[in-house]
Length: 325
Image (tube, rainbow, N blue to C red; front, side):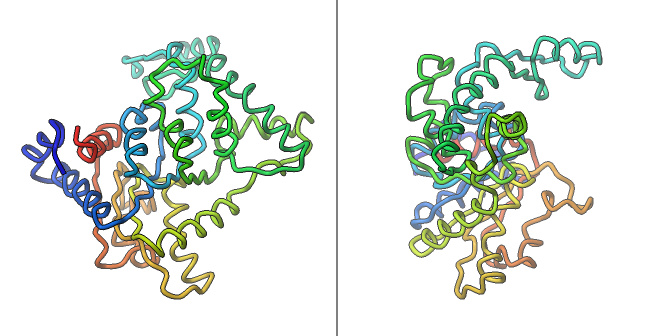
């Protein structure tokens, strides 16, 4: 494919070590797509608050990403940014904050993520009000949906459109909703909206948790998607960060093969992780790709890449390379 300025720069200068792996991983992703493959992308950390949507949304629109596994925080924080961007505060000198400074941020209802503060009222409470009615309606009707499906419906309704504070082309959730992209959100309850949902059950606004489909059901839905998609196309796995966003979906292959006793389950056809974790601490998030061979997730011949660097720097460069920017 044709290279844009970013891609040409990377191929000219990134020749060794982590930088060379970055280029190799981008080329491997291209080769997967050129061979008719699909890509599952995982999002850990605070990638949505880092505004990864500026490049990820276009990657989704161009059908270079075909499914996403993300934390509940990444699911909601893209929408928080969409409607409240002007109220965010950046603190470039966050390392110098005292405990009193941090308490003052709390008083002002500014929740800090490294150098960026998410405004509670304009972001979290705004979306809480918009989505809570959908939860209550589903509960009253005996209906059940996944967390991302409620947010897809909210975005598709146009209800939030007048409140957008960024270019909607930079929202990866909007792009995903338009494409009806398959999403899995393991451990969704570990998120602001997940906490709010639990609180609404505890205070009696919601009769029970039944209106929300579970993580087990996410795994079952992922297994169905994997088998259906792998029957037609090889599937790659691109992991940003570690944690449950990556650990959960990669397990679908050994689950199908070892636990469900399915024969001839295709393995992941490509693997790349951008990681800042340390392997020697026993962290699964920091495990090198070879360790995954022992768990029946990858094969020895699977093209595999590990980029030990900052995902907020590396991921946009790889995306730009793929997009011809």
